[in-house]
Picture 1 (cartoon, rainbow, N blue to C red):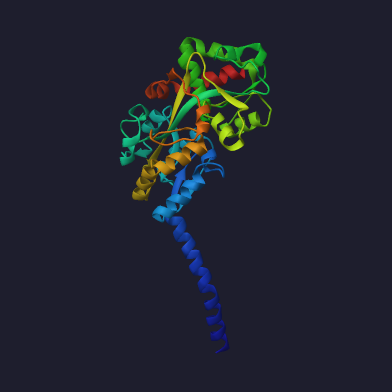
Picture 2: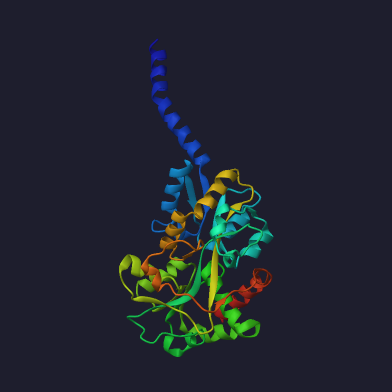
Length: 341
């Protein structure tokens, strides 16, 4: 009887722990897994507040997986496409569209919220990737260090900017890829490598991702960094300073439209569709604009006065996604050879 009583006691103690473990496992199983770039999922990014609101509205928890920049995120999704672990992907842009379609990692879905998005932002008419924000790549500068910043890509090669610029790697970073495409769109197949040869003396370093590069910039390690024309709005809004400014170049600035999509093979298709719709709501669009510091895809989104410092180009540059897909591997190899010489 004593042994029996002891067993009952142990069962009574272990049952609550077992229930808790089962509940946690169920919650994890039911969570919507969203692949995204690291800044999106960070404490100061849009991810945490969007996840909280989505769970509040739909009762579905969101788990973010952020292995790096957008290129790295898509590479992860491609590697897992035969056995997908995620449900939604955030970050592949107009430059990565053709690769995403070729690799067949996304399912098509046209959300109702797309009605509020300007037609010129809909870069995928098959609706595998849906725009949620956009902006222009730009060189940002520190006004306390540079009184006479460059006004063009060509002037960026001037010797007075020696060891003053931080860029990001196109193999791992969407801004890095964007800058490479920017130089190709301006200088063409015959001239872009020569441009990079002229630019090399002015490079302080090339980082893996935007977060590292911009961190060096704000830490005062460099007066010039590759970022976005809208980046100054962050400093005005959250730091009340106009110290950091962006540059609209004479040749034009390369446009990026960030997309989101549902990963093919998801077991949470309905929840994934709800998340895509949710991302296009007015509240989400404002959260995205204020956290990502990008222009919202939905045109009617109200923005604060700080976005007066988010500059727009009169000459937006973009290369065709199919052209990028067919040439990108060679371009990147040639870029590696050029910067390594």
